[in-house]
Amino acid sequence: MKKEMKKGFMSVLGMSLLLASCKPKQAVVAQTDVTTPAETVTVDADKPAREIATAHYANPHNFSTLLIKADARYEDKNQTQNVSADIRMKKDETILVSVRYLGFTVAKALITPSEVSYYEKLNGTFFKGDYKLLSRWLGTDLDFKKVQNLLLGEAIYDLNKGKYNATADNGQYKLTGKDGNLLKQFLFEGSKYLLIQQQVDQNGLDPRSLTIQYPAYNQYAQANLPASVGILAEQADKVKIDIKYNSVTFDEKLTFPFEIPENSKEITIE
Image (cartoon, rainbow, N blue to C red; front, top):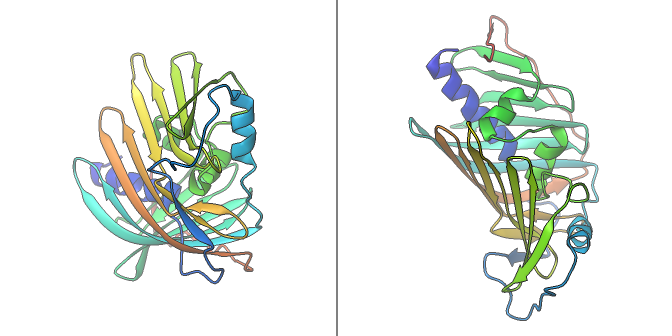
């Protein structure tokens, strides 16, 4: 793949993983800052990992569709891009991301449980394939459920599977698990068990690290959703994405228009 195409492709796909939120038609009940532990929260140092996981999953996600918009900043060693985007999500089925620059749609990505499709207009290219590219780019195995969870502020790994060690300190809970050369860490605030940070480190001949941070949440009747997201992916190169979640709309009837423009050239990922 040409270098320019690869950069553009990875930029848009990176946005596709994380962009979220729009002007609310449902009012925000409250915003929770999870960067500073609440002084009134007393955490139980002996609380089992399974109870922490159960409490995290008890946070509601009671919606069928979600319409989301965001402003995002993408940065790697070669470029910095500021874009806007919206996400249309049918929970557990489809995610459509439209990326805009100066008000014009410049790229789209359609994500389903079986396939990732993408096109961008600048170079006139498109891609259709599985999750191998996204997994390689972000340094951890991905599937539809993990991408959806990442957008919603849930742990990308199933905390009810595998063994995790639980610790508690300063109003926060931490789960740590190891699977071969993969180290997984999840940090939760101690009141509602909202996810503050999740980090995946892979050691060995091809070391990788993925860190996702959620500094604050907006509380809606349907769900507690991140107010902002920071993501840092480190391999041979470093990619940083900062996203501002402004607001969301739930349970509207949505369509998912996606049509690859004529004369686009297919790109392959080696």
